[in-house]
Length: 266
Image (cartoon, rainbow, N blue to C red; front, top):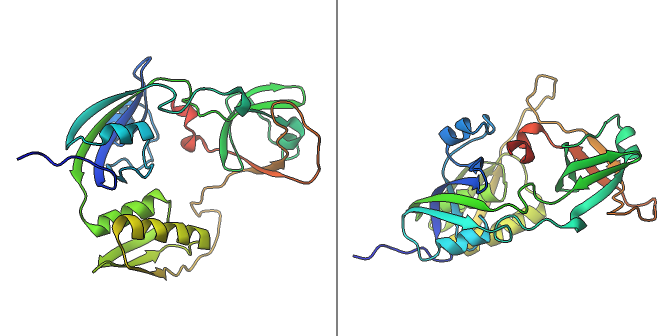
């Protein structure tokens, strides 16, 4: 009997480890023992992930490589353009030093920042100028992915939970009965997030209806509360060369916590 082959739209559970081809150093993995041996974030939750093939949940080259494969282990060698792209000079931006100084932040080479949702690394600090590189930290690198397909996922509940997780929805529990779903949320979703989630869930899982319950919180904020805080500053993105200061549009700039920094894994 021929083994079932992976096709677009299939939900599969897999484990993977991503390495740099040049020296074999690990930058990402789903395996805790590999992460610990590679000095990756000890607090992260390492476990197999469930993805829907063809939905961009993993790199496109990996998805394409997995199509027509069966359950088993595979190695994929990716060129820079197949992985995290080639380096682009257009993604080097100038941010005025005064933007940082106004908030008592002293930028330095290697500092990770988030500018309007774009992650970048400070590459140079000179006079009143700070050059931030918005290329992916792994751009220009050849990558090796070691992937193991563990199983095909057929449970609607598991499929629904994978869509919730991949869209970053904070939920307490989820259930599916006769293609009708109930999701208990930690917090209310925005309308935009709800529309995106329902579109994906109905298309990929085949759900008819989705109902929500939001968990109530007796929340008192104090200094012992374990929230993640980032230091936020405002400024203007001047591009590769300084442009005219319109004085109107501001950008959100925050320092990325070290445990969230991809560049620190290199």
